[in-house]
Length: 122
Figure 1 (cartoon, rainbow, N blue to C red):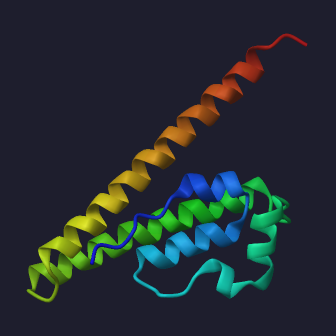
Figure 2 (cartoon, rainbow, N blue to C red):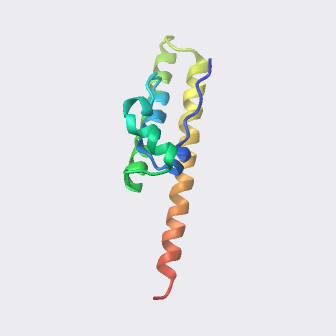
């Protein structure tokens, strides 16, 4: 069974750090979810309110990216020794690559927005 690729953009859109930790857990193969870890996560996502800041969500998204890359590296090493299947390695590697592309695109948009704001005359 191929695991679902976690989405950093859904974590940013929802504005909850619980979604990012769920993505991190899914990337590392853990069976826990962010909503189960915190009882208020589901309520915040349902109402659209959040107590976490943008920097927290962004930090959690970067942590998720790091854990995805570490999982892909670990599976690659396990496959080299014959302890993991090539399919699992391919899925983990693709997951890490897609998350890297998404983080890069978000960073580029943030830099463009910052530069646009700085170019405005007061």
